[in-house]
Amino acid sequence: MLTLIFSVLGPASCPGLPLTPGTTWTYRAEVAWAVDTGDSTGRQSLSWITTVVTVQASDSAVAATVSGWPTDLAWWTPGRPLSTSVLYCAGGRVYLFRPQPGAAATLVNALLNGQQKPTSDDLILRFPLHSGDLFGRDPADRRDTFYAWFVEAADSVPAALRLLRPDASDSLYSVVYRTTPDYTLIGFVPGVGVAHYVYSHHGTTAEAEAWLVAYQPGPP
Image 1 (cartoon, rainbow, N blue to C red):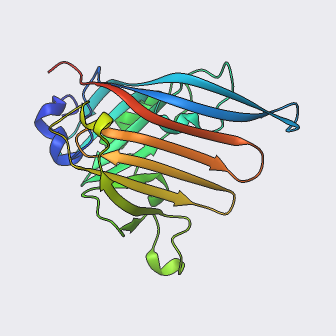
Image 2: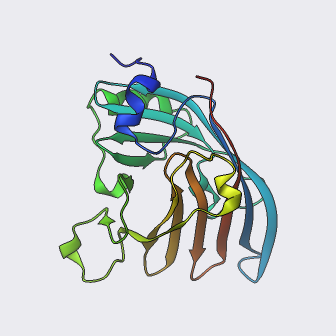
């Protein structure tokens, strides 16, 4: 059965990440990009809206199509359209996929039917979050925290974020992915979702920072 209502299964499969159709997160973002073959830099402030479009579930997992997931801000340039991502949640793990245009529904069905399996490369969150956790690769592969998601800190939720959903967690978790060429931070508040997003490339200019300024849950 692939059409169970998410409210029945969702919290168990994706705890802390509110995925219901129609849920929106609005961010205030600052972005920078290389122009003129990298000789100069463009900068812009913009409002960025992330929307849950569809949600389907199996007996043990949830898959949602999402427009404008915050990581789309990496390498953003003016005129770039919103893309549709697929979030797949199973066993307290959240996987992110970026299907080709028009292929999201096919991917959702393949994931829920077991025809396609997520890998550690697709993993972006693992619940519950704890400071010092490392996931997305075997910890024994390296002695540092590079090329994996690392829960770097758990800080108090800023007052402005707490106003958006007073019953949410009291922690803002900084989940970081570092590589040699770039750096990604997801600031996650359980019960709210992604509240802060940062991307920084160390070579050609590609910068983005976004803070959540509005949250609207989907209809029950």
